[in-house]
Length: 116
Image (tube, rainbow, N blue to C red):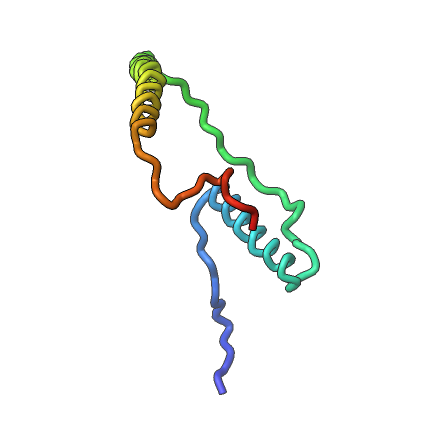
């Protein structure tokens, strides 16, 4: 038989800050919620526990970034402005192709089919 010693075992050294703690608590809460839905436990003990707030960064665009954004929006707007014309042209061509196509043999339109 193994003799028990006084040496502490299983010590966890955890690195990370509030973000790591928040994600870990969220993961544990999800696991416990699943356990409740499967009937393994009656209630989720993680509900109502306080979690550290996430660090929200406040950042503003620089003048150069605003210029780049403006150029990108102008390019996108020009592309979008041409899109309806090209869609209309495709529909017009497709309609003329379908009008010139001979009817398919042995295929009835849905409205002409007999009820089953």
